[in-house]
Image 1 (cartoon, rainbow, N blue to C red):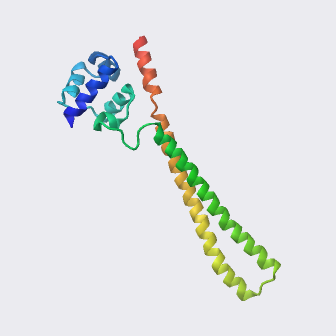
Image 2: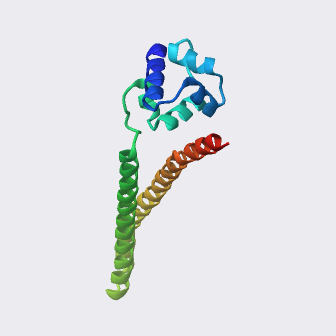
Image 3: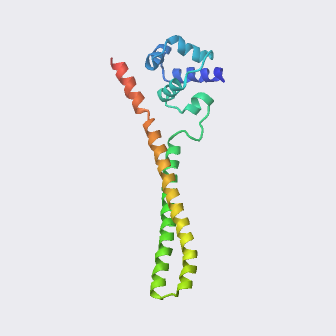
Length: 172
């Protein structure tokens, strides 16, 4: 695996017409380190692997494994945003459904002047339904928050920061 990863580093570097010295300068490592990565003697650490992937405009999956994984590219971001929307919608619909059942049953009990034993039976059916729907709604909104957090994290990992850093170093 080390040798193949090194071959990919070399291939992507050459595709971008970068020398080992230029890549080394951008990553704050020595040219010998780049040479060792490319020859398969060693592998880059996690931080340098991420920086290389950003530099070459590829995912870590492509750099390390040689093929794109599920978490790579803009399609994953679109998929995450659609999942967030679907989860939000489900949570809202189920929560609203439970609330509607509860409110409707309360109105009917008052309007029809239902006798005491039937009120208890009705509430024994309605309350668990309401609690389930509200619980599902809360769970959905928590899940949506987690998805939102992942989206924000992935957006922070954008290539712009590395490109700006490369531009500054080349300008100096």
